Length: 132
Picture (cartoon, rainbow, N blue to C red):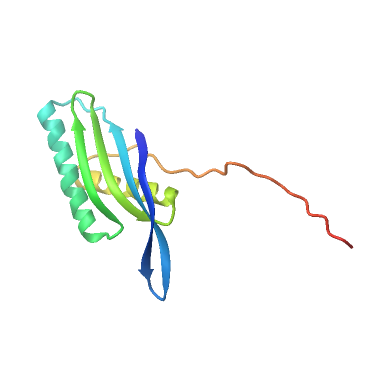
């Protein structure tokens, strides 16, 4: 599976009494499938996934611009989504959750589905001297 954050820009979204800052992230995820099927069936699975993504897009304002590409020769499906989220990890997880829901609705199984893991880049302890 490959993931690419294509574009990120800040948006202000009205969320009740305060304005909330959200990122608009164009996310592209490649899935390698181990499906023993002919090209027509493989492309039909991609079309079913797209249909389910459009249904989810219609009821979730935080996702839009879904597209699905299939490469039967390579056995890959590429899903592109524009996701609105608070930060990059939330946007990536949202994209994975939406794609998984669409895959299930299209009849696919998703064992060993990836999750987003956030790890600190650096942990540091600093000491501040305080006068007594």
